[in-house]
Amino acid sequence: MGTHVLVPIDGSPHSWAAFDHAVSNHDGATITTVHVVDPMEGVYSDYGGGGYYDAQTHDRAVERGKALGEQARDRADDAGSLETTALETAVETGPTARTILEFAAENDVDHIVMGSHGRSGVARVLLGSVAETVARRAPVPVTIVR
Image (cartoon, helix red, strand yellow):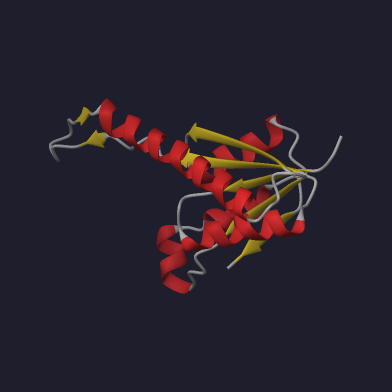
């Protein structure tokens, strides 16, 4: 069985750089893209402690994830790598870093290649870093592309 590489994609230039890196450096592997939908996508608050859930908003986020998977397939095809590399796509819902780590563990991933926005200082502390969390907790090698 060949190498299985996981590439989280969110549509940002950084995630596409990671995808392109994986495609060009893991010829012959199975590459799986995963788009993680925030479980709060579609939840709105009235600031009074209540709130409501709009399922259509969540569904649109899932559809966007599927569209990103198709864009990945087109990019890989344009690079001519689909002849030797298997490309799979997935859309998952959950907290981003945890969902990436769980997906990797449950799907026998050998390597994770992901983009980083390169935030530092206060921005990283306030916003967190998905790439950093994945790199620290992953049971497999992680390549972070900027």
